[in-house]
Image (cartoon, rainbow, N blue to C red; front, side, top):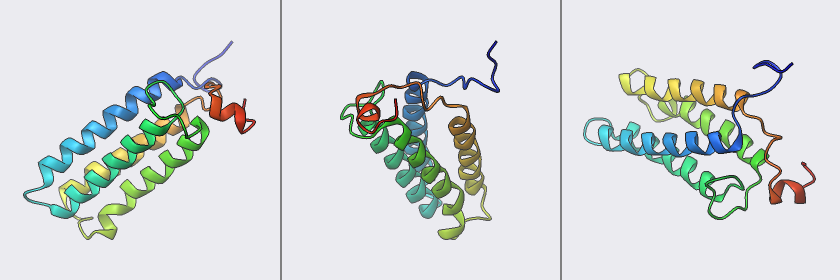
Length: 132
């Protein structure tokens, strides 16, 4: 019998949908913050571009130029979460309400990474690297 503790519920298709939603959210935040918190807008734009770029190049449903293995995508997700978490401090707006958006996204990203089945893809790039 499988459950959430031994079988991650997020497959590559769902993960792709989440990624594109996160990218769109970051781009919307960049527009929202651009007038009153330029560093937050820049961080949102950087995070959105990172998520979108990695997604477009990932070998999973929704990837257009499938060059990044799904497992490598997971590693890049961790890097993006770290950028979201550290960015407000690095850019000097850690004590603003906008910073909370980035902290919450980093926490959410950690949950998605933990709940994704990184072995379920069987993508071409994964097979070439011997992952599946």
